[in-house]
Image (cartoon, rainbow, N blue to C red):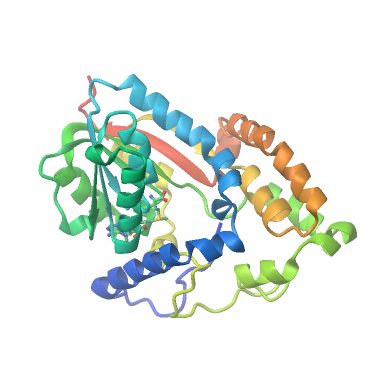
Length: 326
Ligand SMILES: C[S@@+](CC[C@H](N)C(=O)[O-])C[C@H]1O[C@@H](n2cnc3c(N)ncnc32)[C@H](O)[C@@H]1O
């Protein structure tokens, strides 16, 4: 949800790649350091673990189903921008040799510690560094990214490089990335209308909402981009990506052989931010929590229709290089 600040100023000079990479690493280190305080005052459903579990359940289910269906051909993987390693931990539990790489040393430390705690460290390898400057000892069967590819400036070159150097020629790719920034007009209208409702207005934490959104009022301007690392902001390199407005669904369909795709979050994620994260009323929060599993299922069904899926917040694409499918 926090992809709200574009680098759309008058200055069109591309940022120095080395500086950008350094800033990106610092940003994710800071996020890992502050994770406890972010949980304490979460500003996004992704920082509320029991809600995040419910909301991302469908994608985990799909990931595991695909892995089970390709047991014989997928034995190793590289997870690009693995963060705290949760994706690798899940795949290692399926017996897959899982390598995670991330710019943030702090996240890599966490990933290693968690693998040990879960007794799967013999199936996991975690590397701190830039995935573009690194090479696995042998090409892997599957490349994954959970929300990381969109942090690569020069996306097209980056993905071609990674596919050519990290993956077996007839290997697979499974990427979960943002599909559309922000909400559909229908959802926005509904939420704006609700926000202006006098009863809800009393219970909605507008002050906090504006602080997080960088807005001054409900219809007010978004604050200017600043150079400081703001943990509530999209990451430095992520901003560059959204500045380019890449349509990932189109990109993947044009460049790869898409075996299957699935879309997530039409109403449930935006609604969760509105009715849970920024809501002061315990009653509304409790009601939302009870309804959430149903909302998520309703979203998943709705998103099979392209009329809705074009507004989906995230997508999952399972793919191979063109021309290699048997
Ligand atoms: C949105 S986070 C996703 C983390 C993780 N996959 C998850 O689902 O929690 C994006 C991650 O990409 C990493 N990243 C960005 N650019 C990278 C690069 N060039 N090489 C390696 N990791 C990178 C960042 O450090 C960050 O941890």
